[in-house]
Length: 131
Image 1 (cartoon, rainbow, N blue to C red):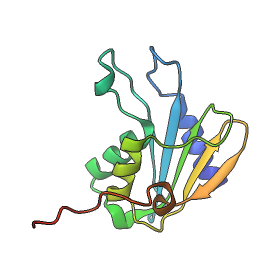
Image 2 (image 1 turned 180 degrees about the horizontal axis):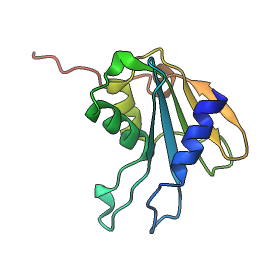
Image 3 (image 1 turned 45 degrees about the vertical axis):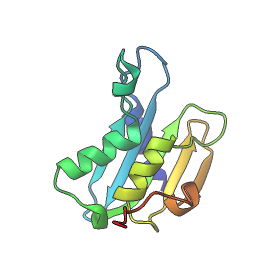
Image 4 (image 1 turned 90 degrees about the horizontal axis):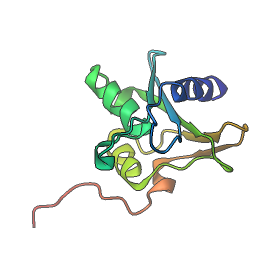
């Protein structure tokens, strides 16, 4: 857990945050030991910005890894309590990360909360049924 959070903290350094000045880092541990990192990337057209969690997950899938390769995930930011993913990230995590994978939410002060996507998004939008 500590190593994964350290990688997430390192990812914060790559954030492109000219507007909010709020850096977020994410790191995902895979079964083969690979760690995929992501940082938030802003854009003047705010809707085109991307959070650290989604950056890491989209990179993971783009590199050929899949949901079943994921062992753990960590997210960190400069917050008073452990950071919490936004709603969009919670929905993406819900679809792209196994439900029982530990997710470590942290801040730069060293506070950590261990959770899962089931806890973060209890009434998730999973699959569309054709009725």
